[in-house]
Image (cartoon, rainbow, N blue to C red; front, side, top):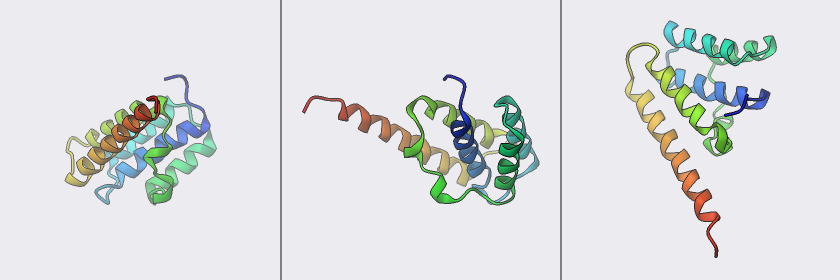
Length: 120
């Protein structure tokens, strides 16, 4: 994936933060992972403030739509979500279910895109 732009970075972190909230508890390991990710993605100070807010209150559900993830960012979102749910050394059932749902939706989206390309 090419270097993510502002919108891509925030989209990725919205998903990651939503996974941190899956079990209704954002623990220190998850928070640390998010902070590492913000550094790796070179977030601006304004973006970091927004992400910190999502660690206090989850991002709005209407902002977490797998169908809004561009094709070139889907794998990065899945990998970041998987890393987040493993960050504390344990995977809660809610985290696993959310991840499996995201993975299934992204897979369905990719299948839909493939069939749209078929001749009619």
